[in-house]
Length: 292
Ligand code: NAP
Image (tube, rainbow, N blue to C red):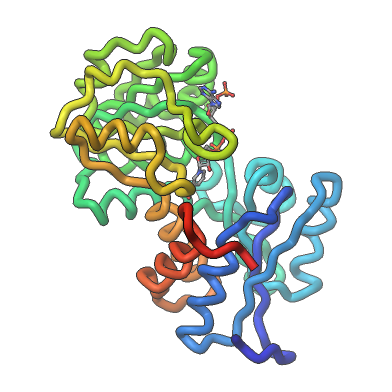
């Protein structure tokens, strides 16, 4: 545990509700390991107070914060500068206070791509099927396109949402795209994909026993199946994909890598990625420790 002094740099996370966040565990472990005089706190900001909370960051000399649900989009209007990448995604998950100037970044997409690299999935030239088209999907879809994906198929319960996401992000200018209703997704489209990514909340509490309704007969052993969900570690989708011989990837890698990038942006130090992952894994899964 670090000793808090007048020179301790404060970072943290703003969200609402925010009780179950694992980010303090990961970041405080990293600060302590590298002996950095930094602290990561939790800021439960009521939606009506977002503007005041963000605008107080320079006055309080807070070095930076992560921003999570429900503020990733709303926060853009209170920042001084937004990176082109975050602007395209339309969401900010990291704010850096550079001498009073608030700069907004999005590290989710890069975190996702880095999590694929860890399992030796090479995105360039690949066909990818995305299930869902919400906030996280926008970062994932654009990052896949920027990493050279050949085609992105988006399947949603409401096809206009997929089209809207593609249009708003300008995805179609980067990569070949196709949209489907989840309920009528042909099994050939599943079979065609090199990587399938669940970006819906189906598989996490309170939907642990659920998964997107897709024709599983299309799955085969040359595919990767990824779930952005990290708790539970093995969602219903990942368990079924394993039975079909697919390689599976849960959301822990994305969580750790997006956090690692935020850590770097605040400290300019190399993040201790493995230790950050191990710190989180103590609290994820069935028989794990309860959050303090
Ligand atoms: P979101 O903006 O609410 O988007 C959720 C998407 O899932 C929407 O397209 C939504 O469709 C769809 N959906 C919801 N319920 C569905 C259902 N019953 N059947 C079919 N589709 C359904 O949420 P998000 O912020 O993108 O987060 C999505 C997931 O990613 C969550 O599980 C979150 O925990 C995870 N995540 C993980 C990380 C990480 O670091 N690993 C980071 C961010 C998010 P509608 O638009 O029709 O509602």
